[in-house]
Length: 146
Ligand code: RB5
Image 1 (cartoon, protein in one colour):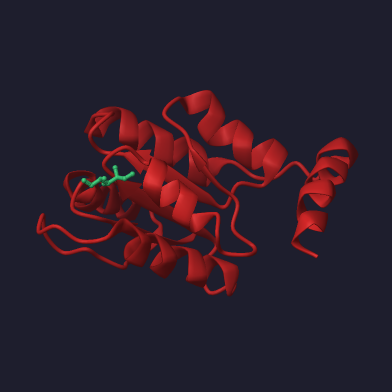
Image 2 (cartoon, helix red, strand yellow):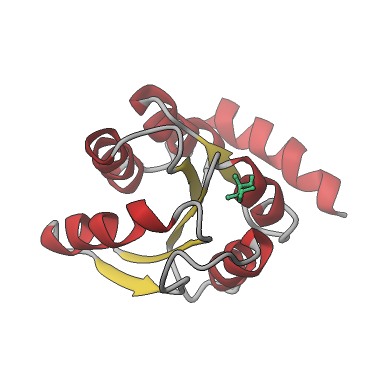
């Protein structure tokens, strides 16, 4: 799967280990920054991933900041993006299966590397079910874009 990932300075400590983990699992990962712990603005990096997901250039995105909240708020401003902050493995796959989540948000000041690896694995391995009730609910959400 082609995955884009980004982080601000608060999320940076998780980014490179997650890239290595995803590549080891056979995924193609596009690193959209930031490149170090120097303070920067999370919307710039969340939008970089969200824009590529919305454009269909990338199947899934992962955005990381300190809490995961700011990156999530920013990513959801991009039409076509369904971003969720998931710090438990059930949500990390269920939000894809039921809600077609396409961007996973993580907070590097909240969770450690081992859990983060399990979360991204659950996220990338999950698929939207396409079941009628899930499509019906998703379409109600999408109708708000109009
Ligand atoms: C940066 O200090 C921090 O505010 C940011 O990473 C994020 O947690 C915002 O939600």
